[in-house]
Length: 185
Image 1 (tube, one colour):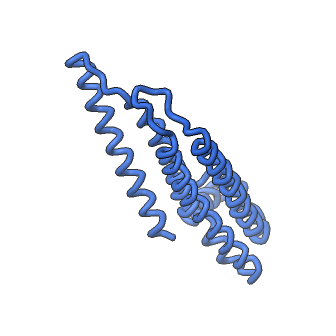
Image 2: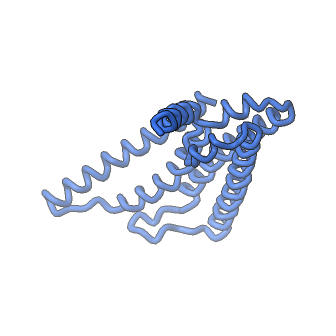
Image 3: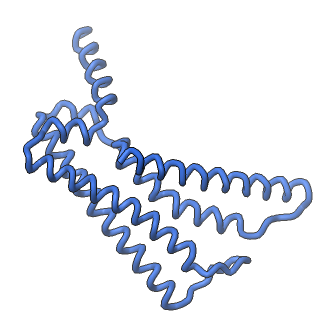
């Protein structure tokens, strides 16, 4: 899964770097030569739509999503493991909904032959198909993570549910800070 995460990070990084170059060129042309590249805002929208699911994938795999660690680490280990399982299942359900929505959007675009109302008049099937692929990458990752969480729960492997589905370094750091605070009190 770490390789999957790195591939998503590289794809996102390359896409954002290319977008930064295009935006920079457009800005220089506009300021120095009073000439604007048409469609840069269109490309930006496409990049965000494609890049967001890639970032969601990285956050899910790396377990770097937002969690109230202070509250989570004070719960009993069994409850922590149950919450980690619930979080993995909820994220998989959300990603399945999002990929279904994206698929329906692409199907409607195909059916109506939608075209962007921009200077480029881009057939929307192309950027939306890339969006669907990125959403599929996110869904695949979250479903695999949820399946792993379910298998660990069925094996009653609380330790693995806690270590694989929680930011250990953050929890260890918070635990030491809490310990320091308790000793000072």
